[in-house]
Image (cartoon, rainbow, N blue to C red; front, side):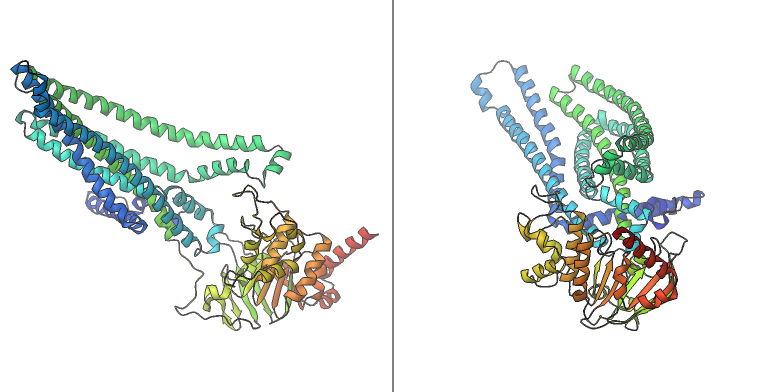
Length: 637
């Protein structure tokens, strides 16, 4: 299973039988797994709306009865017409007063009813499908907000998510629709079976039809399983094809793709991956179709034999013409019903295997949780002391430690700057501090207590953070700022004040709709695309808007020009007043005001102190600072 752990499909988690004695247990576990998945689907649809199950059940019963009713009406019309022909000429008035006229009216009502039921069934399935898709999407979104951030760094997690997202939305209602089609077919099958059993000469026909259908059943189930396995193991190829095709329509990447003439490269990669993906899929489809053609020819020959037998009986006067249509229709319908039962059962089986993807996604375990059922609440609006004790960290699925034996203390109200080259572990340390990850070894204390003892949401609420890869949301300017603290009651003055402090107010006032301007041209035709610097000012405004105790800034001014950067740092003096502040910056001029500078290299703290202390030490920080200072001096000269 390529290291998939517990994520394999249900049937693959069942240990294959090693001997004859293991077969009953194997089948029991296999069937049990099917019903577990099917029960999950029924519950999912029930939560989407109980009316869906009730309506589909009623429609299934009606659709099962209607074909038989139509066959009986047609039989009686033909038989009565044959009787009239035997009697001889009758008047037109006799026709309108005969039972044939009433049967024709019933036939008309039957046709109308069939159309109405089909339209209602289609409408219910479409509406129910939308409801179920919404239920599944909400369920997945609710789950995603609980999943550890570490899961998003794992390619196997994306395989889970891709499979669940691709299949789970439409599969549940499709499976239930197939189920109720089986109910209809069973009712229809039983009714026609009774009709054939009533004719002594045709009783054995049913058993022959069932016997001929066995190979078709085997083919369907075998290839549904093969199809699932193929789709399951080709998840990587599908994600690659999506990535290559999406790259050429990604507005953020298309400029570079054009300038470096990368389009043909991505098209070539897409074509190569598709060729491998398509080759196996085509072979699977052609192989299944070939087997079905063989079985279909055999089934057609069997039906021909029965048609000849019935026609012969009509020819010699043992049956009437209406009986011919009824019995041949019954044979055809029974064969069709059996085929429907087999194919729909196979599709349900395949569908439940795919729904296992959703079940696996929903079972993804969250490890970043409080240690106890009654976690501590963080005290707000007060100073906080943070302490790292022998903290080590490596990303899940990797062996290399990103952080090694980190020991440091950040006192309440301090301004701390993290310094180091790219890959030194600065951003990872921030992710551990905010408990987006848990340390692999060691512990992090907040006010003397392990971060794991606190309620997660309470803990997150004390942080205001600007990540290096800050969020750009397709909402209005105001909403982008308010996302800093949605629990705060909306106050336009607070929003504008945050924009002023982040130096975003000037350009916001020039926008067509000011704070109500929609951003990003994704949904709104009048949406605006901001420059990266303008977006960064908006992200900083979110931090100003947030009422937090600890301010964390990961390269907060990386996309700003020097003048805008200086304006922001001037505002930071006000922002970090009475707050504990941790920020990362490659521009070391900002570190001179810090109470503590922490220098990281290869995941280790190699220097720790004030600007003056580290400069007098003459170590790594002195070298980095002097190099930057020399560059600025040479530029001025």
